[in-house]
Length: 477
Ligand code: ATP
Ligand code: MG
Ligand code: MG
Ligand code: MG
Image (cartoon, rainbow, N blue to C red; front, side, top):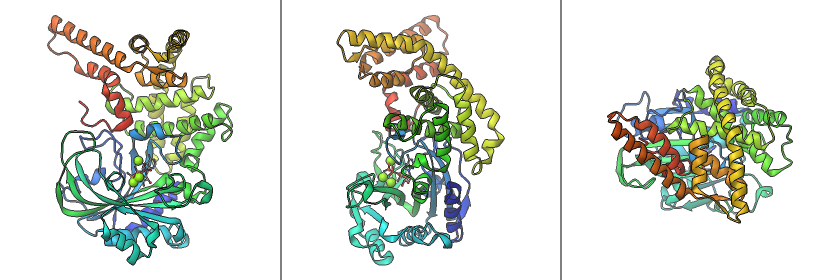
């Protein structure tokens, strides 16, 4: 079953059950607390909070998502992409778990000839929040899932929150058992590779408010009405339905991966490191293409920086695969546009624009790499020559300041050489430079110092680098 068909089937199932089909919102979140849409529910947040009246109390969508925090997992796990599509059904104060659970079960297990996905019942496992007896009962009594295939989990796994203030609540995840060739038996808690999380049903009934910390926003209390928010991973469903090992081998991503293998003269499936790079390229090229199509441009801040990092990582991985020439990104973007064009016709219409942006970023990064890599290699040789394991902060600073090497690139390249980087030293130098710039500005009494430039430097220098690893750049100035 093609990816596009997975989406069609999902939407049709819920449309037939009274849901309004809502088109995907742009990846650029309207919500000021988020940079990029990271879940299907994001556009529906104001309805759940009772701030806006929904066009219908039952809605369904296939939402484009980008999850920057998953970037380090890409290529390494079988199931994480930066760009993916979340299929969802939503109830705004209409039905709750007693109906959401049977809906999900019906769609998953209904034969394909009758519009379902045809999963065998005994391949499905579910988890519920540890004290959600109600959900466990519905799964067991109403739906008929045997008690031994229902697992209970705590706050960390089965209480869903946006990562920013907003609605939240206990959730119930549905896992597909890929069989003994993928690991031990015993359900999702035992082995992550064998049991693939395909769908999460969230019982949105509380609200988190603003507060300290990244994900520990305090729970303010119950929402005025109870809502349903579900998220099914289209790529993961496609992987199961297409009988492939991981999401990068499903129809659309495979086309990019395969072309990248051809262009770099690499054979997929022969060597682990090369496979990881090919998967990163496949995901990142598609991700970059989708972000550019939604109007994002590479830059040094916020979502522009996320896009830049994603594009540059694709280019770097192509180099790691042995690519020498320029222009590879153009070819791969072309494949991504064609592969995604059926679902997103605007990609084809705006192809020329997408190419202009991605080509320019490739050109500029290749020239950065050309000059910076020599300097980097010298620094590595010096470090190793001195028997040290840590690249000095001033080297990293010079690479950044003079050669435009972003710190995360230096970190990655150093790690490939078995070295770490004195990040603290690097940050100190960046701060000194920033203080000097401020001082200069004060002396010149310009009065309208362009803080965005300083912020850009900070983004790369300060704790904000790790937003890429941990969060979605919450409340970025
Ligand atoms: P995981 O535990 O595998 O990281 P999650 O619990 O973080 O997934 P949810 O927030 O519950 O994911 O999102 C709902 C669904 O979206 C998941 O069940 C999965 O099918 C899909 N999904 C989540 N993250 C990704 C990703 N990075 N790439 C592809 N699909 C994803
Ligand atoms: Mg996750
Ligand atoms: Mg999970
Ligand atoms: Mg989940």
